[in-house]
Length: 521
Ligand code: NAI
Image 1 (cartoon, rainbow, N blue to C red):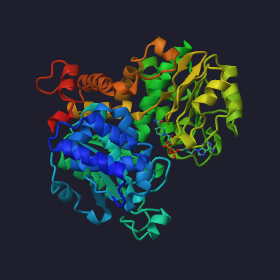
Image 2: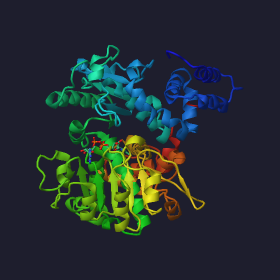
Image 3: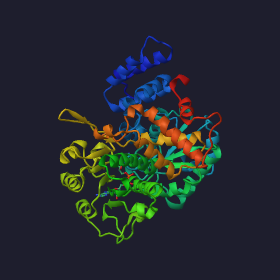
Image 4: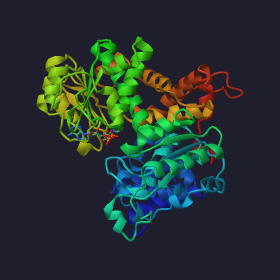
């Protein structure tokens, strides 16, 4: 660290002493010192140093205090870390694959010091969180996200590989920054992109049988095509599209139960028609197809999308490919309020990155149509959220069924505490991914995500729904992941996609006994 504060140094010294066998130093003391570090970015750097210098201590903190530690490993702190990654004193344990490796990717993988890799999180850094093109600095996101496989689902961290593909950057500041270490040229696109990513994916497949690959934060122009090219050839999925869809469907299923109206009678209006939005729309359609006997086209008729040009509808020309299935035969609407009046949605989902787009008029219009309006402002970070919990609660007079992308504080009203649900993808992707690894599944089908949504939703009862809780408490994430992993793995085997490992008679006990913990170090 360029300038190490006393607080940071103290917590590191303590952790080091503990690591070297001084058992008189308790984890509580290390945690207390860690808590006293003021700046989130210093906490992030301290945790990275701990991982390098005292891994046992790092994993113990992570696994015993997951909810408290995660914000300094992943969002929101990882955003700041990625923006400044090239200036921070960081040593990655991840792998960079650059255009200079063209023709040699497999050789590079085969020369990697760790050869038993089961899961890779891979980004090209084009659209990191809501922060845009961060090029090679995107490594921070792969590192952060892969940690969740261990923290939430118990995947052995030695079997996890973060990867950043460096294919240039269109970030003008980085192109001129002497400290930026990535390729200083505009991103390659089209056939050149496909060819390089093709080599990367084929090499990963050839390197490790049954490897799970998670695509992360690829730009809109490539994410859908990349996913479509690989999702049926191997265990590859995109968390921004499919993970988000799965957690949101789980939230919608819970919210629908609270309304008392069957799910097939709901209509969802999305503000934003990008990766998150259209991914959710497709999974809702799949759910309605699989569980309510509709065709996919009929299922999609329950989802309507607004983008920056108004309602996505049949009369629109030049629609991007991923929006076309949702271009329904309805009158065009220029803005959200006119769309709410015309379409009478039961649920509103914000995936637009437009802060405050769900204003009082919007929330009141939803209340005029529904006893319990479902309102999910999912845009991150908090500053981009379409509304806050406080606003949605007040404007709906407490009727709202709410889930957000970023966390909000609970509200106490007449002595009763109401909790805002947070649609955190970490409920889903580590468990579904670990299921695919354990069952050696050939691919992860949409049916698996539907099942994971249903299982997660079923973990919340009516009493909890009344308090606003659409998901079970995140602090029980390992117990939640155990059940989800078991159910999905079992289904993968039933569907003929995978096989039960030797000695696995009961999936839940098998998963439990295969969850890694820090004692293994
Ligand atoms: P994206 O860039 O693929 O899509 C954004 C969409 O918003 C585009 O379709 C764009 O046309 C639309 N948009 C922009 N301005 C608009 C306007 N004025 N009115 C209506 N639509 C407008 O981004 P992506 O991946 O879909 O993410 C969107 C948001 O969702 C981000 O803030 C992201 O952080 C959040 N998100 C939340 C998750 C969660 O809560 N679990 C998971 C994934 C994403």
